[in-house]
Image (cartoon, rainbow, N blue to C red; front, side, top):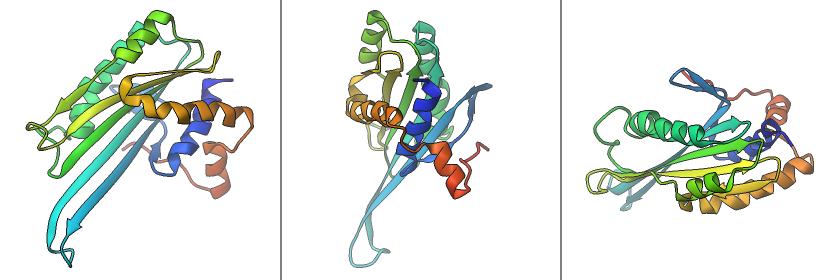
Length: 197
């Protein structure tokens, strides 16, 4: 199984709730895809104008395809989080996120052709990146790192991404079963993925 085939099916699973951008460029490097999800919840009394509170939740997911994941990939991921995803996508280059921000999940999905080494698997499981804003009054952001390897159909994730493992395991079965892919869905409906501005 190729990581490109796996990604094509995985994107369809995300497309139901995420805006999918293909390709996506960060600091001059092109990545195959990026997804964005936004949810807003309000509490009001009788009429919408009597708003008691509003909370906004976000998830940004970057898909990375590699032949083999190594320490350089982990360094690249940390750099993407610190230099791009957190300051630009969460805070929009401001000191704090926008008012009513509750949380932003920064998900990185690495799709590797070869299995991860035992040492690298351990590093992925221990990988952590979290940041709170104004003692969490302006919410927080948290990294969820998950890696799928095509050769052995293995899934390795950090603690924050543990709930994603089921989806990624099911995607292997979907690809083997020849289920519909994102590119085929776009072709059938005559639509295109979003383009980065």
